[in-house]
Image (cartoon, rainbow over all chains, first blue to last red):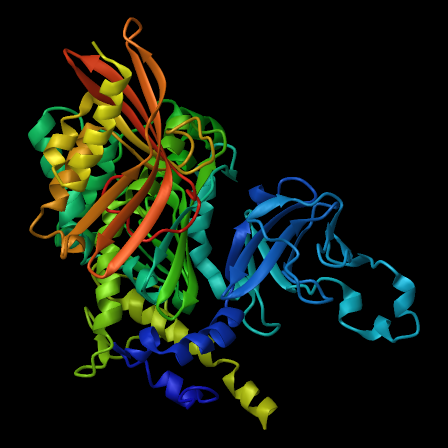
Length: 446
Length: 158
């Protein structure tokens, strides 16, 4: 029996000031409602414009569970469509990326569409004359996702027609994407590599919360990062300069005090980031030639300002995380209430030395791969939580760390880096975007 | 004298060490400059500027092995086990004068933990060098047939 459908009040009651009910992670009905409300009401990452460099280039993606298709049209514009033929529903593109030439052609009955989605041709078109076909949705071609914004080459889409504008939704949080792009001497990023894909048998929100959970690395990752530091010290001694690999692992073992003072910044609509004052990415060795390139491109003052911003993880609500300092974006794609596909993308800083790209790729396989020991540590915790949360003894998850009575929702603030306030911020946004169109659906149903 | 049989025996021995979890014995098979590589792209050429699942030197492999036995390695409670089913290795090069010994072996690999069991298949390429009377691994390359699929945890070695 439906407990939450058409019941915004019941959904909102799952989130208390500093606790959330376990149903947000384990209840299949809540997951269905997330797909119907939360994801369509939010701005979702689709892909990067560098994946669509030429006319006819396309990529496929999912918004929530709905397959979409993005293409570069002959006039240079980028379009996002629902990935289905208007005829019988067959997916137009089945590969992650490719080039379709001048038009898309459905493989079933050869209906064809221009790369802006408009209907180009149907075989035996005569058979539709006088049938009223001109008034159908099919005649319009591929159904368009109307709300699409390409921000500094990052393609975002919102499925629902009403909702917050892109600017109102993301606000100042876009500064992390800005910083990542600015780290290229040419002011440009490029996707050159296939993402690392990693299947997680847990709810997608556990992954998102973990991005700003600064009280777990020194505990959960003692086995991986802690062992890496220990073995390196034993084998090579502290006298030698840490190899790139150890430079990437070691900061995970930083003490609580490090994270406390590094700070967390929260923004409205569930966005926020760790590493305000410094971060685990602060002390990597310099890459020869890079600073000179940056100074030449931006001037010394601006170059140092860009490189001095070493934010750790930025959560863009609901389901991506951006790491500007190592040029990684993780996309937490919901598959089922207890199943999440994580795709971790690396961007190349156009014009920057190879070594920076090498480091970003290394970080990605160390931390985000199914073969990553850090990943093994985390997934074990998520799986245990997914199972543990089915117990009835206590049905609430506690997010109380550094909670202060009367916390303002949708605030911009910099706080202690071990606070769980960003998680509370996310759940405030979760209620907002879950319920914002539920009442309309009630009216429609009545 | 390294013969084709020496190479084949080496590869079977390596699989046996992994299947019986004799991790130190397995690490001892590597040359100090040896690498373990799992590419992420079809017929990948570059382990460093193209994305890989793993590209690790002996130090990083030691970290993995030590981690498996760690008191606080919770993803190994319970422990994983593995099984290698190998086709007869195909000798690609066996040239003692040039010091080049290469083989390619088709495999099915099983990794299990608790009640879960996952199966993978692909090809492993061994680049071996002679050190004294023994062969050592210069490069072990593991190409999964479905390298681009989303896997869960792969905690041991193919």
